[in-house]
Image (cartoon, rainbow, N blue to C red; front, side, top):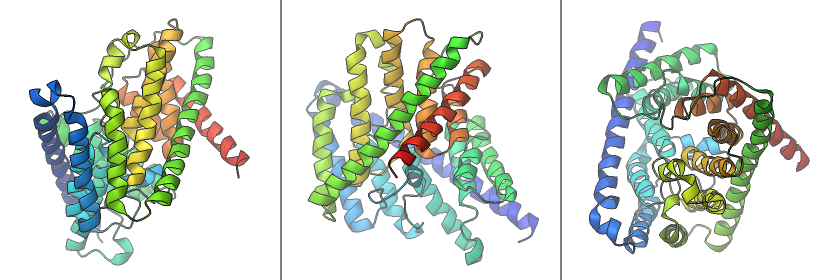
Length: 400
């Protein structure tokens, strides 16, 4: 392909995927408001398990009859961006319905997973329309992902970095393509003033670095690594139990997960959905919840995420992990009020995400963007991410 042909394809893919992303998110927001934010549901708590089970059934039907992708047998958390399977555009209808069913079910899954799958399907469909050779058929998928994710995160370089780290070993030329796709998505959302996650949780910056802050960053990096390890253990345990009792009985598998989820979220509605909006009451007044409840919410969130993924719900792990890390940071803030909250929360988040996705640079940039980190906090984030990755390698070596 000539340079002009490549640029043309990047522009088309970037524009199509970011327009789809805007519509997909817009439709989800409308459906969420209609279904979960109406007065009847808000004043009748019994509607929580009813809604969870109805949307769980929808996800199960999509799995059974529309071949919707899932993460039941996915290996790495980074597989959530493509569904842990060979990309197949023919599964797009099932993936689309399953994405809405999963996100509206109250399951502990984030939107980044299904969005990545849908965008990948759209990109591969476009590539086939371009008559790209089989050897180069999958090269432009990161361009679509970069456009979509940069739009919703609100950063011109974020997912160019993410897709490049996930594409470890690819050429520098691909980095340029990913950056171009990311600029398209970022510009589209910026021009239209659409909702983004940049500065989503603006923590108070720290004015200067102190020696003890570096010690805190190291300890918090260990805690963050512990969160990521707990995620991995929960996923393996959930998969083992689901396989043992339900195997390929997908409807029964998903409905069982729906029942478990509905019971838990009936008593603890704070752990419903991805967690990006449910997190604010705890941030605004952590003392109203207390240390033990905050820690319980952190644990429940991860356990529900593991059940959701290994039963067939379609979603991403990033927001639930951020939720759990934030709960732990807030609990530590109540115990140690002299430590800046930005350090307690963001350092745990960056270590957990870095280890969970095996993408430390992406984790640093994501947490810095969402948490409005200043340069002093970013310095500590780098240290925590290194510690998190290091702890992960030591644990892996110890058990292999």
